[in-house]
Length: 167
Length: 167
Length: 167
Image 1 (cartoon, rainbow over the protein chains, first blue to last red):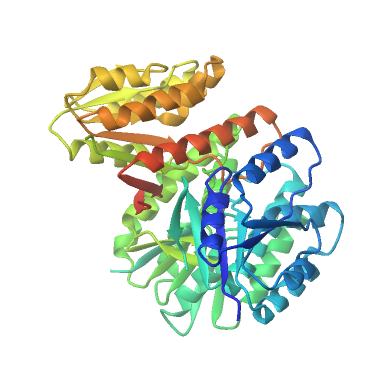
Image 2 (cartoon, rainbow over the protein chains, first blue to last red):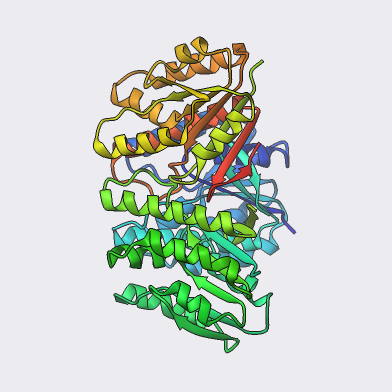
């Protein structure tokens, strides 16, 4: 059964770098499953910074929506999924059923053979957003984190680039 | 002297579920002290989700304001207070003196016999709010958390539904 | 080589009080290096609250910009820098090169003899800000925290006034 590791943290808390190191400790090469969609220049810049850090040991797959199918198709090496919160955001913006997609993902995890390191964002520790959509999103993001964390073997909170062991 | 446990965390971090389990580990039945006021449909939906999880082992008291009096009146079994941050919000919106009410609460804690599990929210880890009232609220919420934590025997940070021991 | 301690946390998480105690545990007297600029009444009120807590064991230096120079000039006793996030904000608002200033600071740390306790803010655990400048600021604040944390001997997350050891 695949080992599942969730690395969560705030913006620029060093989650991705910790997740890359954790994934590469599990194998000589790995899949980088990117959920980002480059809608605008800011996002394109973020993606290219992340890409610049990755070397030829990584094989990149883009999966803005089809996360379960991509995990099924890459089950011959460790995988890094960066990140769950963007995947959730993609699903919600496309008006897809994120709860059904999450159930499919959770049902798949015990069937996988090779490890998965998930990155996600902590978005619920600020003041309650005035915007109703933002409130609904942070509720969904928190629930998704809880569900993946419950299924994970290991959970880490990234703080200032350092790992804090939660599970 | 009553054992005091503070469980804090972000929105949808699983605080309430952890607090319910912690409270029921202390006795066969317990009081659920709800501070929420159902102003609108969103809040009514949240309250009914929380209520659906609670079984007949819980006896519910509503205490949007009179928290100290309610704790005094229920000192024959473990209590769960969900949550301190809403109680603070109620006091501030009603223009009551939250610092005086907090002092009354803190003075009561050492006198209580049965345990109290407090739930509160982390609201200070986002960007500084532009709104002055929001800034004042997050300052008050942070100070209230500090004061209860100082008086508590145990403090837990909920992260993705998991408990991180702070004290 | 100077011992470096970073204490980070949300608004009103008790970071400054923990940092003051940590600094005074290192010597009988210490420098308080304040980066705050009193632009308005709210900020003046915050500064005077912080000042009221400090006693004659502290010698205060104001360093809204020249942090490296101030650390160099005070290297005969422990220093508390409160806080890095305001220093960053000052640099960005003045359109100075915060990355260059940070490199200068990081190059200085191994040369210092007496300990430094840095306070900084966690600002990245809320919902993504709509304001582009706020997003850029929280990215910069997160990166600064990572860089100081990597150079630090000890890193603490303040939660409800209590220290959570990260490094």
